[in-house]
Amino acid sequence: MSDEYVEPDDSIRKELVVAVKQIFAQHFEESNIHPQPLSISYAFKRGEWSAEVDLNWQRKSDFEFGRTLASFKYIRRTSSTSREMYWYCSSGLPNN
Image (cartoon, rainbow, N blue to C red; front, side):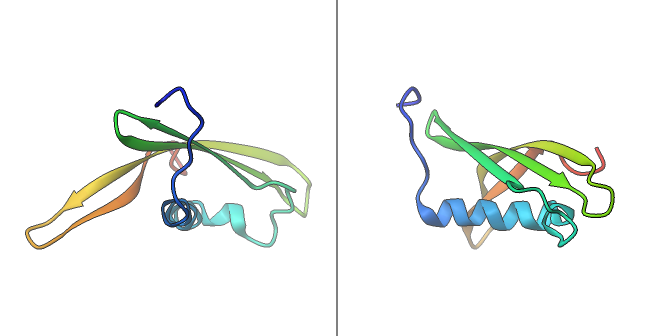
């Protein structure tokens, strides 16, 4: 199945966008005028989702371009009372 083109369902995709906007808030400020600030590609291997996120920005004041590449994994968080899935940024965090 990993050779096929697959995408997660809408709720999983929306969770990733929320996580990206929280972690990379500066890419979604009004000063970013890049025509495509966010591009995401998904992979499903060994029963797990991962995503490569390409964040682009262009500042309104000086029109300088920038790009950030980040990798995410959809992992399980377990506590004594619950289990939940969430997107974890495994590389490309801001200021790293």
